[in-house]
Every structure is written in C-alpha cells, then in structure tokens.
Length: 380
Image (cartoon, rainbow, N blue to C red; front, side, top):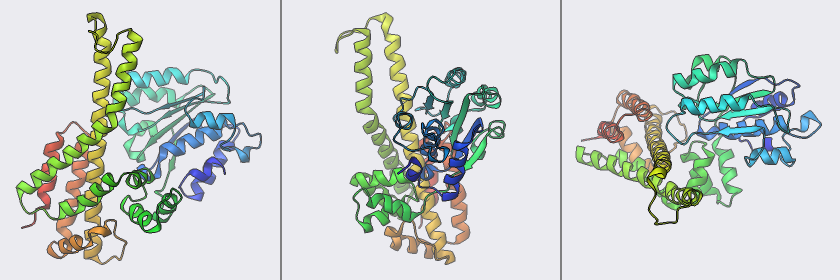
C-alpha cells in the first residue's frame, strides 16, 4: 500500500500528483487547496515524500516504506521544512526564516522542500516577503503552500504556483475510513454525514462522545431560539465550549513547555525566576496565549460553519431538492423551521453567517459576533 492510497481524494488528482512527483524537473511552487475535509496538509506531505522517495522506478515513488518516505511523514527529514503557525497569522519573521531555509542545498535528497500550511493566514506584508523566493527559488528548492481556496492567497503568490484543487471526500469514503477504525456502519454513516467529509473532525467525534453530543446539540439549539435572552445564553455557551476546548488542548502542553524551559534555564519548579530570565518566560507565555486563541477561534469557526449547514438543510427541505440532510438527527426541528420561514429569509441568514465567519477571522469580538448572529435565528 503506497502513500497515495491514504489520500481520500479523486483518482484524477492522485494521478496528476504521481506524474508530477515522477517528473525529472517538478514545478518549483505549488498551492494545494481544499477545505479541512480535503486535508490539503496531508496531500502536501505525501507529495513531498514522493518527491524524495528512494524508489528508482519513478512510478513507484511514494512507497511509504523507504527511509525518506518514513522520515518525511514523521517530520525528521533533513530536507523538508513543514511549517504551520499556531497563531492567528503568520508573521514576517516566520516568513523570513522560511526564505532563509529555502536557500539551503539538499542534505540527503534530490530537493529542498518548504511546506507552508495555512497560507491564507499570511497578511499581505508577509506574503510579499515570500514573493521573490517563490518566484525565483534556487533550482533545488520546491515550495508547497496550502490554503482552503486559491482566492484566500494573495494573487501575486498564487499566480506563481501550480494550483491543485482537492475535492472533499464523499460521505461513503469517510464512513468506510471510520468503519476501518472500529465504528459500526450506522454510527460511521451518521458521523460522516454530519462532518461533511472532514475526516479529522469525523475521527474526533468518533473518539469523543462529549464532542459528538455537543456537535449534535448545536442545530437543535439554534432552531429553538425564541428570545434575545436565549440567543445571548447560546452565544455564551458557544464561547465557553470554545474556551474549554482551547484549555483542554493546551493545558498539558503548556505545563510541559514551561517545565522544559525552566530546566534549560536551570531553575527548579517553584523557585523564584531571576529578573534577567523573566523575558524568556514571558515570551513562552505569550506564545501559549496566541496558540490558545487560535484553538478557540478555530472552534468558533467550526460551530458557525455548522450553523451554515443547518440553513443548507432547511433550504433543501423548503425547495424540495431531495438532497441528503447533513443534520438528519434534527429532522423534526429542521422541518418545523422550514414550515415557519421562507427561503428568502433563510438566504439572508446565509449571508449573515458568512459575514460572521469573516469577522471571526479578524479581530472582531467573538461574543458580539455570536450574539449578533444568533439573534437572527429568533422565532416568535
């Protein structure tokens, strides 16, 4: 089984990437685009491994068992830099570091590969730092950027890259992936449908009954709002859940990082930190706060995206499209909402949700964004 078999994408995309990986002179810059469900980061990593695979037969590259493939996947290959920010945006300093690394000659392989995930998090000034390096990289360097969509990346960057559009895997393929991990058919089908082809999210809901219950509860909550007070309460609960998720994901790692830093500085746990070392502790704490904010924001974006799927289901019922419902577990509430509202009003709400998503990606106050959004769902 090769690495290509692990990608839940279309055979056409896989065939194109296999050909490019086997080419004597691959293109120097790539932009892998797709939603979280399409997993562009995984596709970029498999492509990088195939470019450096030790198989002599070009058609066999991406074997997944040679030393190069294994080390690329586990993040220890000397010629691959896989960068992903844990903050809300990629800084100019981080971009400059990537440009410097791109100048290095390959140590053990054919290429020096720079993977920059979530390129949509680069502000324009940061993108401009990478522009020259991507346009005219050293002959041995290959850049691979990932983003949800080509339009999320500055046009001057994407025009210099070969774009690979990764379709979201179908519900059936995600369900089969969950079944292979021990899920029964009914549970696998329900989770695959709810997560819209997002394998990582589907695996999370499969492993965490609490996360699945929260995911199933949100559509019913949104469709049962009857007052401003209920909308405010729902917004607070969404924020609390996002904060709790960020805290749970960060707590153990934060403690480990602090302990490691104190050990490096020669400071025992509980011992007073000397004044000249406090800046390093403060820098670590600031990084951890940025990471927690990123996790919280991503959790809120996921929740608001789920609200968008609720409106999609309602419109499907109102227009009689016959499309399978994403939130079929809330069919009773969906039908009641469809009967009590109009398609025009729900299309306006779709616009409101999309605006909320844009604002959450900026510095807008999450509470105000959520409160403003949920009040649009109040039915009297």
